[in-house]
Image (cartoon, rainbow, N blue to C red):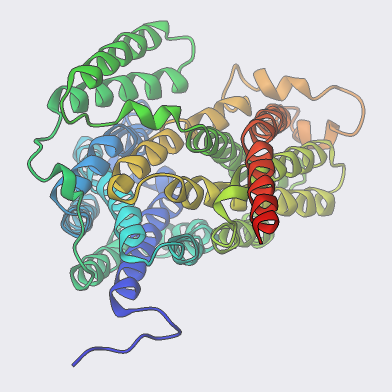
Length: 479
């Protein structure tokens, strides 16, 4: 007996939507809940201060570098299969993290968790895109991302509470049932793969060079002065392009980078994601160190921008593919202006309101980077496209933190852009005289990204509308 649709959505689409939503929620919850627990982790495991950052960096490097290969694996061998495998690996490695006896063991388990996360997002996005009827995938993906965004709201507070009242290990145990639920939902969805590549093996040379280039790029963005990483990224990137040109079935079809809307939405999404990371770091720091708020008060105030980020996915899912680039440009412009107001704020209320406005725009922009790119590529290679997009977003996320001047020279760097006089003084300096991280450079980045996206919109969207208008005119003339 067939199962009837619910609200017009067929069961296979619901299962795929649930799998993506819960899987993305699991990944987001793990990321946002862990950061407040890191000081407790170091104290409990008696680890070196030099090793502790690798608890986060090891995960991000594995996840970001492996996503292109993971997306293509999903296209070749089945999106449902890869999503299930990723969820199982994520859950098992989360349990190993919870049981970690030493800090190096925890770092190794986090790298394995990053591999699982690399499979979850591209495979989940491609599974839902192909499960949805043509033209309906954007809204289904937007709703799934909206649910996943709830982790942004509750993650930091939940992580802090668990680390203080129970144990940092509870943060990892918390993600295990969500990973299991992701695998369960995925198994109920319809399998899909790229039928045209059924007999094609994985492009191993492309996978190795792409992974190596992304690893080097991520390390360079974390330490911009380390030019050896930049050279490594450039050399491996050149080898990757050479391998893809020669491969009969490339890991990434280089024609993807000639798809101007796709490239624009991906690049603009990276700008938005970096600005989001900066905002999530600067706002709590400014409230606690600049205005003397307690952790609880800052957490409550932080919930407004976090909730604004969460609603971006459903809104982005309602944007037509043809309007995605102009809307992205508008979002980046709005975010840049709001971030600039937040940077200049002299009262905490203004800071929170401006940050919430920026979060609304950044949430829609981040959602468009995923829903919009899936709508402008061929469905059979949706995993490949989502893998590249998610990889770019993940690898460049750390750039947002660098642009704030966090940890740079004892408060110099971007924070130094806030002058000793004027409106930025309260946010720019702590009560103890130290310099807080700044939102000035992320604001400038958003505004520049808005200008470039608007230029692309003029080049691509306006001529398309004129051509469509001429076509309608000819049809009316024939009538």
